Picture (cartoon, rainbow, N blue to C red):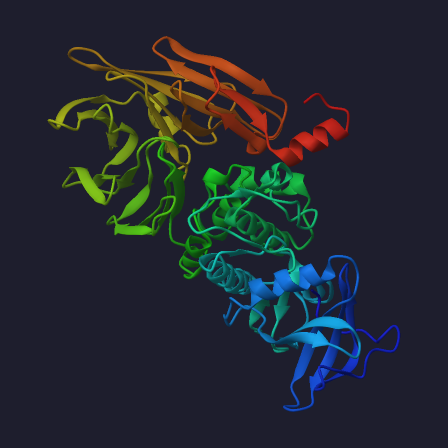
Length: 504
């Protein structure tokens, strides 16, 4: 619903519900019109959404009224009145008027937003959506037209409007199969398969974030390139890249976690993962949050936390500066040291961790804290030190073998524990490492760039290629339930390929 007033195209009802004097037309939509009006009792400007007598418009009015009446939040445009005007045969919703216009108008007319403005706007919308999700309401149509400035000053209060496409979600549900809704360019890929859930709103808000950073409306390929370039980046770009991930498990587990990550200008470290029990985890600074189906979120603190160091799909392990922490029902320290170290690969099930202390590689047996170590070869140090901010991705193949790589690099380390020593060998993967997953069959590595996606399976004999697709690796989904695991493309990329004559 766009509150940018334009002159009325035709005469409008002078008074609605006996108190709202119409002054102009704001917009027209599929269910009726949005009118500018003044409340004759208070003098306050209002916006009236009118549902005409068309087929099913009464049901649309009733559905939106039921959703919006649940919500009271400073960043959601307030509904002031509802009713049926007998004289004009209109069902109406009356809202507070946003005096600053829509974000779309600001993007068209004004200068580009600076980073503090972008962070403040995204946080305002995220807190509004977190409130809606907590009350079982999904918006499903987040876009600049539905983000309004409540005031007309230089630092306006931003608010969400138009829950006409919204749906009610059963408490504790992650998604349900529902009808298609949303605006092209802003809806999440899974919506094409009818998967409706809170993650839809997070994706759409992430696309708005990309638009604010780029200064232009992005298409799906723009979003894929942004996600590929920034999926491990710190700060605002890294957060937005996670929000627009085509893989829902790479997005933050809740809109509340998004708002928390946007709350500080200090850009805390952010990471996300999930385990094989359907639980999703967010690490924002030192705070660890666990979101499980039909359970209240759980929180814990890991001092000087850095990142998750277990593969996606494994029970969660958190790498700290001086400790390794697991999470079942609460954080539990598995290993602690007096000096800093870097966790490269770890598996709680196998009770093994491979860590780095300076120039030395150490293999730990967590149960007895027994250690083996060796000097890292120069080629291994060059790989690990090439990009200090890059994320290590490690796979514990067996009790004595681990494969360790770095996101964005096309080389990995083959690490093996012999009876009396460790051996480290470097070899090429040809495509840059992107992510690691634990599938039903075992661990896999996803590699690739803007034009290719490759799925590799670590074995005791090396890396074996399982699948390959000609597509941006950021559009690739791993089907871990098939045997062997295989690659799928997200619904939007697959539709574009088929529509352009490409092979699915």
